[in-house]
Image 1 (tube, rainbow, N blue to C red):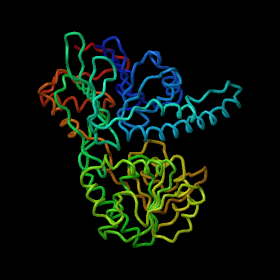
Image 2: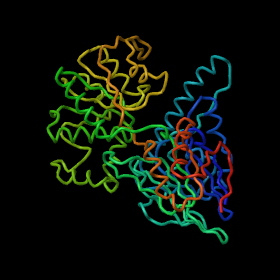
Image 3: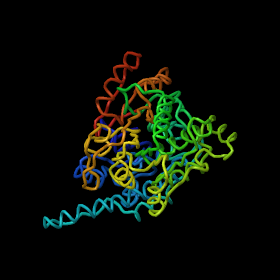
Image 4: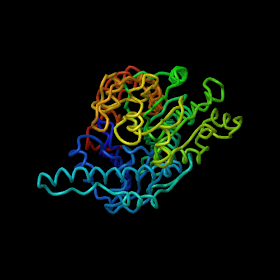
Length: 466
C-alpha cells in the first residue's frame, strides 16, 4: 500500500491524501489550497492524478480546506462515491455552493484588472453550477456504519468533535497477507465544546495520520470564553449599546447562538434581540437544527428541558435572510447582539454593521477567532484608532474586545492525548495539516512520551506501508 501526501503537508490548507490499495485508488479529502492567489489558482486547478482514476473519496468534514476542491474533481471526470456523514454531506453542499459563488466573483474582479492591462481573462476554478453537481455523489453515513470504499478495506467513521458531522476515518485494510488499521484524524476537536460531542480517541491503529495545527498551543477552557462573553454582553447592555460579532458562518455562529440562548434562559442576561445576519450562517444553522443526533448529551438535556425545545431557536432570536431585513437591524432600539459573517470582517454584511456602529462608544465589537494579518478583523483586534471600511476612514470609538478560547481545534495537550490513546499498537505516526511552528513542538512532546517513529511529510511525499 502507498500513501501520497498531496495536500495539507507542512501547511494547514488543501487537505488531500491518496491511498493506493489493492490496485485501487482511495482519496482522503479534496480540500481547497488557500494562499497566494497565483499559487492557489495553479495548485487547485491541477491535480497530481487523473480524477477519472480515483475509485472513491472519503471526506472528514465540510470545511472548505478539506472539501472545497470537490467541484473541480467532479468537473475533471470523477464519478465515484464521496463517503461522509449525513450531516457533513448537507453542510458541504451549501458551503461548496457558496465557494462556487466566491470563485465566480473573484474571477470577475480579477478579469476587470486583467482587461485594463490587455491580458487574457481567467476562468473561475469552478462555478456555483459546478458545485451543485457534487451533491449526487455524496454517500451519507451514520457514525460507526460499516462500508467498503474499495476492495480489501472495511471502513467506518467516528466523531471527531470538531464541527457538526465531523469525523475521523477508520480503515481496516487487508492487502495480500497483511492486515492492519490506518486511522485518519481529519481535524480533531476538543472536549467541552457546545452542541457537539467530544472526539472519539483512536484505538488499535498501526498507522495514524493526524492533524497538528495547534501543536504548539495550550487551549483555554471553552467555559472561560463564555464567561467572558457574558461579561461583555452585560457591560454593553448597561450602556445601551450594540454588540457586533464577526463570526464564521459554520460552527462559531451556532456555538455563540446556543451560548447566548443558555445565558438568557439562566437569567444571566436580559431577553435582548439576537440577530444572525448572514445567509450562509442561516442555512448552516438550519442544517444544525436538522441534525440533533450529532448533539452531545448536555445539549440534548437542555433541549428536553427548554420551553422552546430547541438549541438554536428562541423568541428573541431573529435570522435575517433578506437584505431588507438586514437593513432594518439599524433601526432596532439597542441593546442587541448582531452575529454576522465573515469571521475576519473582510466581506459580507458585517462590513455594514461595523460601518454603522464603529464610531459609537456605547457599542462593542467582539472578535472571537484568529484574525489573519492585513484584514479588517486584525486591525480591529490590534485596537487601531482609524480603520477603512468600503474605502472610507472611520474613527474607532467602539470598544473592541478579543476573546480567545472558542477554537474548535484541539491544542497541544489534546493532540498528544489523541496519539497516546493508540500508542500500544502504533507503529508509525504521520503529522499533517500543520505548519512547522505547530508540528515541531508537538513532535518533541510525542517523543518525550515514547512515540518515536514520527514522519512530517513534505508535499508530494510517497510512503509504502505494510
